[in-house]
Image 1 (cartoon, each protein chain N blue to C red):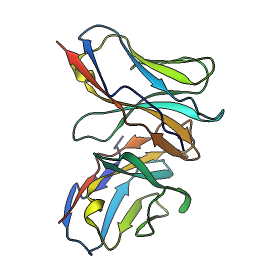
Image 2 (image 1 turned 90 degrees about the vertical axis):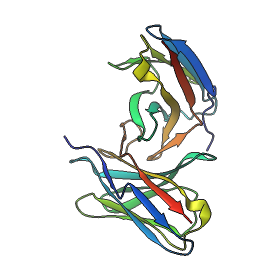
Image 3 (image 1 turned 60 degrees about the vertical axis):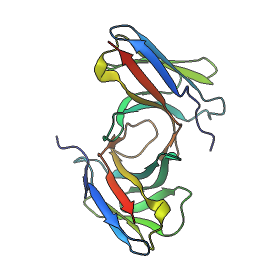
Length: 114
Length: 108
């Protein structure tokens, strides 16, 4: 069974640009969550999608957005990039996103802002 | 949302049991306790989770205090491959709330 796939693995952008990251969940998983990981703040929840609907959102500015498609694949977008957006962005999938269900993570997209 | 608290790092000898503590004194009654681990350059890996009673799986055991204010992850026989950052997490409202994690060092 294929795991969670995130593309691209590495990305370099400059301030002011925008970026789109992609996540393909495990087959049959309908919930996709996104997290940001930085050395200073650790892992922080961005948002969660289920059946193309955002059910929960973390404390991030509106420049961070996401969406989910009918096949459960998800994308997140960051506009007007800032230096502080440099981080590892992780995607996780689970069957239904319930708090008693394990989440399965991809290896992340490493975003560097110059 | 209150995060969990864990020791920054712990050391253990190979082939000995490891007990990783976690404090979650403000956890609500419906929050699950999850443990994940992360190796360098990889995404986190699920280890175990529970609500009230102790749990066992092929990777580890989870002991949850009766008042649910703390828990302990038990690796029964640590190997060098268990060296990682271990995160104790609250599972709540369709999200995982992460603490800072414990870096586990295994000495051969």
